[in-house]
Length: 97
Image (spheres, rainbow, N blue to C red):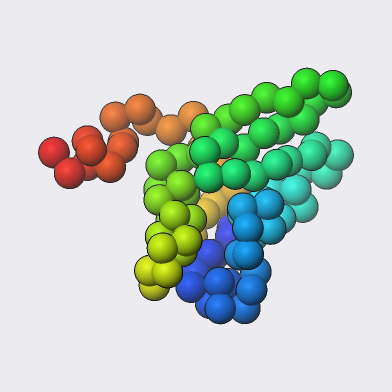
């Protein structure tokens, strides 16, 4: 399953908050029976009574923050499942260095 998130989603009002972002909706649709809360720092996956936090890849966080700042950015495609444990060296600082 692929998610394409672009500035059009923002203009259409589909990203009004982190909980309503298309990433969150696609994750919930892809894995029936598992509840997700999506924020700019982590996806919280509910398993029974426990919520397990999985850090979002930095590029997802930066992408959401760019919209919050009103910046128009190119579409980004996500292939599900999203890598919830990305390479720790793949950060904005490491990429810039």
